[in-house]
Image 1 (cartoon, rainbow over the protein chains, first blue to last red):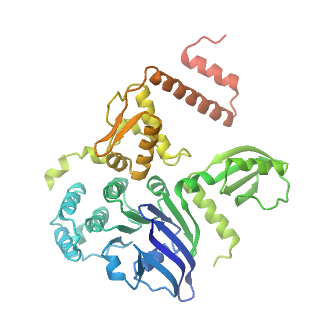
Image 2: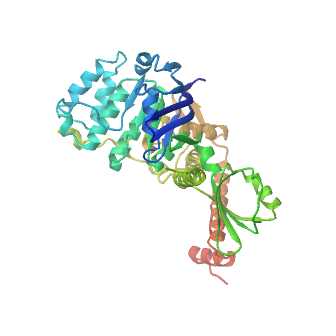
Length: 300
Length: 143
């Protein structure tokens, strides 16, 4: 199976302040891929590079099997995109915007668009500029879905929206995936939402990819270990040490990545004992990953 | 459009009680949680023989989870002999051998008690205290 998006050794820079360095990323076909990272980490820039809206200094981007930006016209016909900021003409009505968008895409699904107007409870005669934030977001999702693309690229589609709107949008996305088997690449801060829906997740910080892994693997591999009797010096552990703190008295608390149950043997070989192994959810894991990454590299 | 506001799209936003409280933050994978709920419903008779499970599409949209997660749960249930996936028709509860429901219920009971004991240990409650509390709660006379 090919990847819906394949990025190799990508390098991009604007001025001196920000760069994306040596980025490698594979988004498997059919996955719902969560793209996490704090503000300014390079998520939107990466998305714009994937869509050919920016040109990389070096590296290779392949989208749906074709090279980007060389084949951008061919690729973009099959990619639905929802940008971070609404980009539609405020003086057109919902219906006019749908008709306008439809004209660009031979694959446009009129019935799907009608169905979503009803489900999202949008008023066709309303001007875009008069819509609420939630209604705008719903319309943008509608336009991306009715295009019938094989890949949806969504840049923070539900951030800042109320829970009812978020629910409607996520349900529509999930339904689309069930029906079409499409790939969704979705960036967000809303960790709990991604935790629900995504089967892959990547974390970015400061223009670099910190981790990319199947969701279950990331969630299961990230643990807080409560230990006692740990010697000060330890060698190379078989897992990723994210943080190490001493807790009250002789105990220590470690946060580790890539943990497997058999690794307690390693800890015992140090002469220490494992008092507890605590599961972390995605948000805790995400925070610990960022903290460890920033602790290790100089941060501007 | 105004009339639209009065029709409640039931299939769109409601979470069926069977899957209420599925927790994506839990360390237990979502597909395991879903399969557990279905098994419990079968064990207690909430889902009888030949009952249809929600379609993959429907359940994924309702819970706002990845359709692949629902498929994984249903495949596991099929492998365990609880349901039958008829392609194009849906997923249905199978006729179970006598005693299977009861056996499943007692396995569920064991799982519940294990979780209780683990939680108690973690929060520093002794087993004797736990047992006393349990007996009081169940109305059994403590000696």
